[in-house]
Image (cartoon, rainbow, N blue to C red; front, side, top):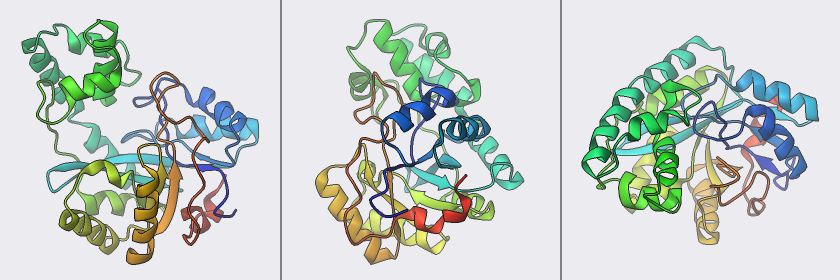
Length: 284
């Protein structure tokens, strides 16, 4: 598979905060021209068998995946793991611990949103949750739109759920070194997801990439739904600066909410080595 392969190695199902099942995502990816797919639910591998089976059914090459929430410099950073053994005990236990605080955080968000004039948000969000361990801000956003307080989920995040807004409750996630170790220990490759989203200073970003590499991280999402053309160029340069491989993924959550559908991203820029070149033996 070349760097022009239509790989989509970042998306979400109802197992975390997406709205489609793994069985709905695989044919959608295939129809959209995806040639290599990974389901990367947040802090969870519970959808992996289903996704692999659904991919097999439509003849779509598949890599296991997960998106792990990490706290770095007091910011939530996401690390995507690809091509690992989803039954690996240390990985499974690490993800369970990372998920552990979500319900408590969600209840607190409900209290804060009630103070901001949106009562019943925890109960409302729960209606959208496929897995109670994985209640997230996206579930609250869907309820807040449904209840008429905002026109769309982007507006909800801007007004209520981003840092410094009335419904934001911080959470301590996994440690960067632990997340990379769980992925690599299970035979996978760790990738920094959508780096342009973190709003780090140049020094903080350098520290993230440096530390990630020191722990054994190997890749960075260069082309992803949240990145601009300028971001593609910048993070392609980071690949050569830090000796990293380039990944590509839409971060698709829902037909109604996501800017970029599965398989609809531009190609990786020239001059980078795709992360899947390291993972040929892990493709199912």
